[in-house]
Amino acid sequence: MSSMKETIKQVAIDLFFQKGYFATSISEIARGCDIRKASIYYHYSGKEVLLLDIMQTTMQDLLSSLQAGLARAAGVEASMRAAVRTHVVFHLRRQKETFIASSELRGLSPENFKLIVTKRDDYERIFQSLIGQGIDGGTFAGGDIRILSYAILTLCTAGASWFRPEGRFSVEQIAEIYENFVINGLKAAQWSCAGPPARASY
Amino acid sequence: MSSMKETIKQVAIDLFFQKGYFATSISEIARGCDIRKASIYYHYSGKEVLLLDIMQTTMQDLLSSLQAGLARAAGVEASMRAAVRTHVVFHLRRQKETFIASSELRGLSPENFKLIVTKRDDYERIFQSLIGQGIDGGTFAGGDIRILSYAILTLCTAGASWFRPEGRFSVEQIAEIYENFVINGLKAAQWSCAGPPARASY
DNA sequence: GTCTATACGATGATAGAC
DNA sequence: GTCTATCATCGTATAGAC
Image (cartoon, rainbow over the protein chains, first blue to last red):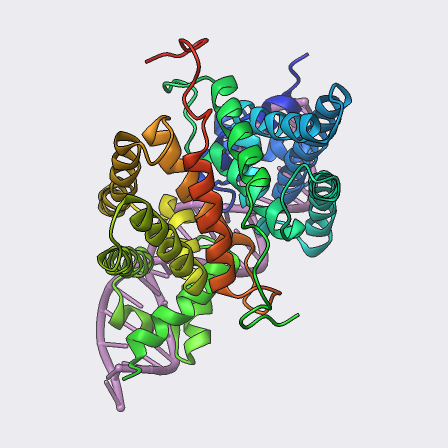
């Protein structure tokens, strides 16, 4: 059940979260697993592969979680609420992994970077599609879909950077707060820019 | 005007932003300044001091910027609008430094860490005070002040992680969008949690 | 102020015994 | 699968000449 490979992965998640990917050495990971550093290489061919493994699992689970959340919702507003709620809950429940996945992308080689960013883009597109549907149907006020999706996602993702499990609020409470905040923001006006851009560079 | 010490600082900002603090070596910084790495130590006693210098300047300028913005505003709502606007503009204009200041705190020793975090807390308290005044005066709906301030600040700070100066929108346009989003969120209801917490741990 | 040269530890990774 | 032993490299930082 709990093989050494899984132990290594979990210890790496803890250390990457706490100290950062570059500041964590293979020796430290090995120490956390009570084995010698050479043994790590039996399970993972290198440090970056370990990081990639963590990120891929996280992104896959994140996407699955969103799909499951959306499956239970009907209509644009309910879907958006479900999407935000699932996103926040996932990011708070799996705080360490999501933090790593969004802050250690620079640790990846160009090829591996592309692998993860592609998944992230797929995920973002689901939100952008929902926003677009909501605007078209009049449920949400207008605005730039791309900017809106970034704002919403980074807002909720950032929750994982300050959330403390032992704090005053539960995961569900914070999810509810964020869900309402986002829906209010989407419904309110003023999101579209009045007049032509002052100094845009399309 | 542009002494070598300032050049080193600017090159370090570029590299810390691009590759991260731990992934950047003194040699690389020296190469970017067209000097040898030993010469860096004439200006800075070590790598961490360089990081600290960058962060202190950034935090000091950030606070000054907020104070200047608030000086021109009267009333709670206008003040909150000014605060958000200044915060966003500063973070987008000085994208690299603010990104470093908020993502490389782990590169600091405990003492230096405390130095920067104290400044950050002072800054956050200004927002929390505004939120509190707004709620007390009835301008804003209720809600947990701490959570609200984190949400607002991380939302706007995160703008610096996706903003591209050559993109479709200007700094001012994005600031306006965020300003309205935050004010709408603060005015809208639902921020207070109905009933007693489900599983809070005060 | 900048250079060359170097000390010295830590790092990622490999070879080969068990 | 895990170990010991080792390698080559690179990191920060210092000493001392110019």
